[in-house]
Length: 302
Ligand code: NAP
Image 1 (tube, rainbow, N blue to C red):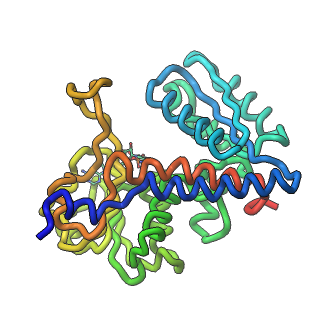
Image 2: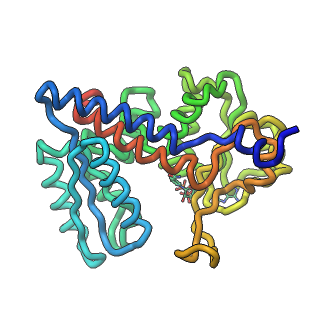
């Protein structure tokens, strides 16, 4: 009989491993481009203020670019930056032929209208896939930059050969960056996809009953430990998107990341489960880099 640790280890979806394999493939593509004298992909980031989390995320994205041979650049602004100043920078980047992808790290200070900035990025360079044109294309099933987290989830399901066709997928959370796009992707006539999707949110009644019917649960809520063991049927596939910082005096930083899933209880019943950290999180960088390659190769916008 398997011990608890052995049982959990056999069910873990390893996002780090999948992300590294995608990055390895992108690195080979960069080498080919170099050998053929083509243009090296270039990702640019705008970072506003001194938020510790944002600094870490941008640094990780820049480091990943270096690792696989992309060019990268970063523009920093103080949190007193005006909307006009940011728009001017986005405009300049939009017109810079050397830059293939632009990300504006969120959150932005309260006095900045996030939608205004996001919508100002040229869809061709919106490698985060947040622009209405790119989200609209995703809804219509047209080629587009799929935003990093939904991309990552679909890649994990594919890598682990998880059957999705005809399965009941319950997505909890309907944000524009995770829940809504992943619910669309899961219902599309593709593989992975072809699932019957139920999209739940804070006004959903009987969420437990709905979750209990799910073959696949994608939790993107932002409430640590929300999905309990008694909300999950035996053999369900669990994708935990949540990343909330919770107090952890035993760590050097004083915090750790906790997912939306009550891991120990749910893992006992699951057939596959993503850990937090190390599950969906690492995939977002792979998604961003993959979109930047598509932009450099003009695969989406000719
Ligand atoms: P969000 O914009 O705050 O959306 C949260 C969603 O959860 C909303 O649709 C909300 O419903 C729903 N919700 C809240 N309370 C609920 C409840 N009691 N029952 C059912 N649904 C409920 O969040 P997000 O941006 O999608 O992020 C969700 C989590 O994923 C966060 O922890 C975030 O940090 C994490 N995240 C991680 C990654 C990654 O790379 N791993 C990427 C993105 C986000 P309403 O619409 O009704 O308010």
